[in-house]
View (cartoon, helix red, strand yellow):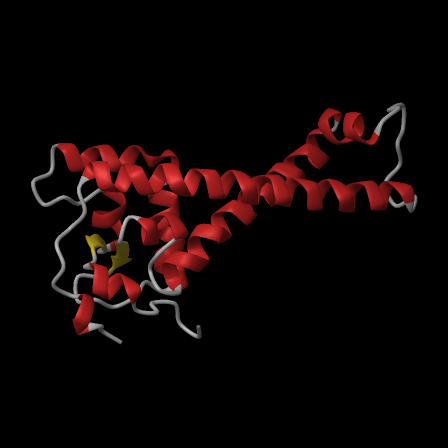
Amino acid sequence: MPNSEHANFPRASFFRRFGAIVYDLLLAVAVYMIAGAIGFGVFTALTSAGLIEMGSFEHVSDLLNGTPLYKGIYQFWIALCVGLFYIAFWSHGGQTLGMRAWRLKVQHPNGQSLSVITASARLVWSLLGIGNLWILINGDKLALQDMMTRSEVVVLSKEANQMRNWHGV
């Protein structure tokens, strides 16, 4: 459903987006650490229960890092958790905590929030933040991930940023 209240705000500049990226990076590192701790805890529990054999490894961490399958699953788990952090915030209100601090919101040009599928596509297109460099040469202030998902990042007014943008909150 379009949100006409947020449809006519100006698009965000590279530097404003960069500020939000730095802020969100700190939060993503926290998610990464928590997901890593949970993943390692589950792996340790499975090893202690005898469901995963230690083989010639002395420590659980050696087994995890020395076995490509286990390491791959562990890294996938962590990447999934960090990705879901962004997808959840983008699809439920359009703002991560860093975006909220910088008064930014990701949305479709008509003000409509992103779906989970669109937010997932945006995550893939925005990996490593390289797509944001496109803003520096694009007069429309659209990053690669904006163009590929038909979305935009806008700068909200102070009043609009105070509104509860998160669905169900």
